[in-house]
Length: 139
Image 1 (tube, rainbow, N blue to C red):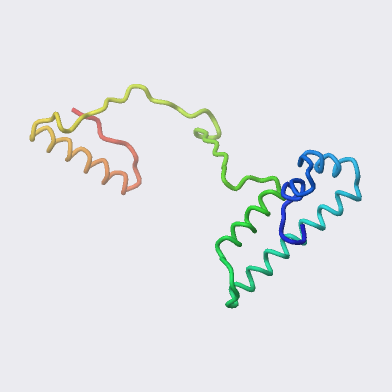
Image 2: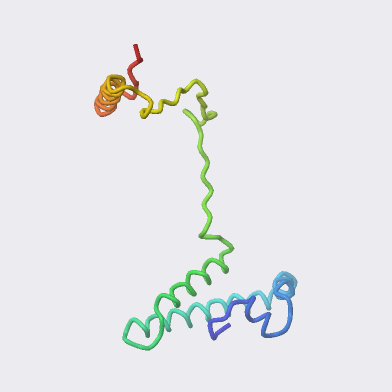
């Protein structure tokens, strides 16, 4: 691991399944300590490589950054690629879903209707900018 390898990568080099190494960590506290030290050494390896590249050394800084990011992700067990988003209504209640909404295809309106629709939308925007979010009723 001191060469920048992950625990899974080391398992492949040793010819064992990664689950075996994870099980050893659970069962043998001294092995778990050694793995944590190995992960720290791998992170130090990649950080040293990145510092060298930023000071003019040979290498691909972007690839090294991804290696560091993926090491962090694997070591922490947190997946940076996914975020959980929960939405709630007012005061944490249920989200209210309106089913009484009418969709208007403006392409089917006459020029006079489009102009009237435009005026309603402009009035709604003006009310929204003034702090009110109520759309005026259509007549």
